[in-house]
Image (cartoon, rainbow, N blue to C red; front, side, top):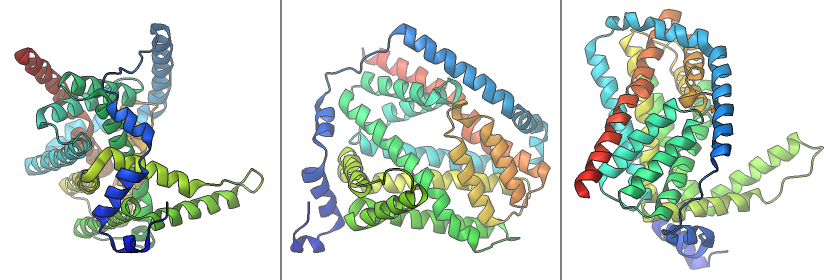
Length: 371
C-alpha cells in the first residue's frame, strides 16, 4: 500500500503502528485470538519414527565429529591454567546474554512476569541441547510451560515463532556484517581491537535491522538485489519474482507479533549475540591469546551458524570442530584454540543444562504452590 505524501515525515513509531494496524496479516491476528485451540498432537507412530531417524542422524554425525569433540573435552584438565576471574567474567557475560533473550521473549509476549519467561527459556534451551531434533522439542516444552503459567496459547505460539525468526535472522546477518572487517585485513592485533570491531559490527547490525523493520525502501532494495543475484546465478531455471513483496509481508507479520516493543526486541536480540561474542573474547583472553580480530569475529559467526545444524543437539561437535579450526586460522595456537573453545562452550552449552533442570523444577514447584 503506497503511503500518502504526508506519511513521509512520520516517526518510526508511527510507521510501525501503521504496519501493525493496516498491513499485518489477518491470519496472524486470528492466531493471536485462538487462545482456546491446542496444536494437534502427532500420532505416537509418527513420533517414534521421527525420533528413530533423529537418533540415527545424531549418532552418525557425532561419529564424524567425535575426534574434534573428544579433543576439546580432553583439554578439561588444563582449565586450571585459567584465572578464576575469567570464569566469573564469562559467567556474567552469559547471564547478560540470556537476560537479553528473556527481554526479547517478554516483548513478544506483551510483558508477562519474569519468572515464567526465565524458567521456560532455560528449560526449553536445555532440552534443545540434549534431545534429537532438540530445537522443536525445546520450543514445545517452552510453549507448554508458558501456557501452564497462564499465557494465551495463540500469543505464546506466535511469540516463540517471532523470537526464533528474529534471533536466527541476526545470526544469518552476522557474517555479512563481519565481512568488511575481514576485508580490512586486520591481523596481528590485540583483543581490544577485536572488541571494538565487534561493537562496531553489532552497532551497524542494529541500525540495519531498524531500517529494514521500519521502512519499506531498504527492504525492497534488499529483496530486489537478492532476487537479481539468484536469477543471474540460475539462468536455466524459471526466474524468481515477487521476493520484495514476500519479504515485506513476512516483515509485517513479525512487527504484528512484536507490537510496539519491536525496537526493544531488536536491540535485545543484538545484545544477546554481542554478549555471547564477548564471552568468546573473554575465553581467548583467559588463555593469553592475541588473534586476528576480524577472523575472531568470523569464527564466532561460524560457530553460531554451526550451532543451528540440526544433525546434533545444539550443534554439539560441529561447533567444537568449526570453532577450533577458525580460531587456528585467526592465529590462535592449536592448544590455546582447543582450551578457549572448551571454556566458551562450558558457559554457552554445558552449564545451561543443569540450569534448565533447576528452572523446570522451580516451574513445577511454583505451579503446585499456586494450585
